[in-house]
Length: 389
Image 1 (tube, one colour):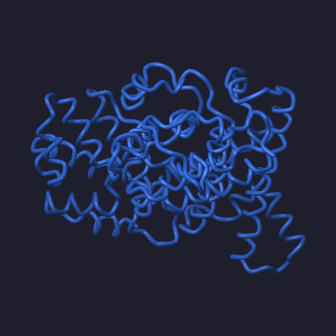
Image 2 (spheres, one colour):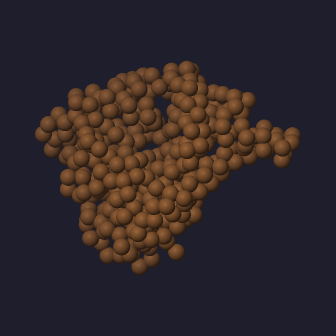
Image 3 (tube, helix red, strand yellow):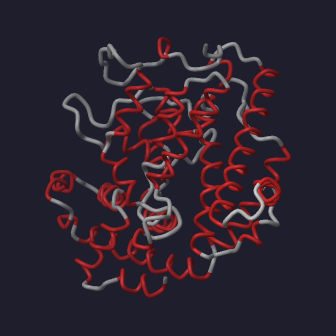
């Protein structure tokens, strides 16, 4: 039932370390399951998207976001006759490398790591699944298939020089063909991410009171969705009205992506996976009209949510956490947990020590980063953040 350009498990490039095939799961199902059972995936529970972990249980975390992305991606992949298991694996892994405090933490860590090759959360996701997860007797990492690693590394498109450190270091030994577009499955995972965060950031922003429904009713896609709900369900209570409208927004984005991608794929007619990669352009895409409307929505969210004064005040405080912790651990890396000490002692250069410290900080949850900051500096940023809420 799969399209000829979909990834077939029977034709998949194998793992770096040979393992016998499972009697019950395809190689892509095994990849997905190993990602779900990884320590990095569990830590996403306490890594937030826009808000800080203490601000409430309602707001999305990286974990709930990844699950939502995987659900959307699996639906789209099924409609396009792509491999749903590979799509789901890439979707579930796409945020594993995120730091505490979302993009704020990433920006701070990247600035601190600039003398040592920088920091990039996509590259860090690859580093986690190929090296930092250490549970199996026969290998470091999760020993995922080539297609899943490729999807994690370049689901947002080809990666060009200068390569992030983690990608460059790994690709030197295991070529992921970074200069080409990834599989259609990975492309689906990338745009499912856009669909998920555009919708749930509207929902979370409304919940936080950063903007009101009469403001978003002026937005494309969103306004017509509210009008349709009001016409079909007059007098609906505000919570149900919001939910009904936003699920229509969700549906409109998914339907557009499926319809446009079907058209692109039918016109290109790639004979197989390699032919699809050789096209030199993405095959999973929104229509031009939908893409323009999404830009308007993202512009609204940037102004009214990501750069809202109350959010920016918290950004400054949580940036301080990363900026304070990094030099402390660089100055005395033996402050890292005991199990990290053999690697600390093996570090021969400042760059190696900095990469180890970055691995440790990037793996922290919001909660643990604040706890470590309080332990090492004796202050209580949580109280400051709560007063700013």
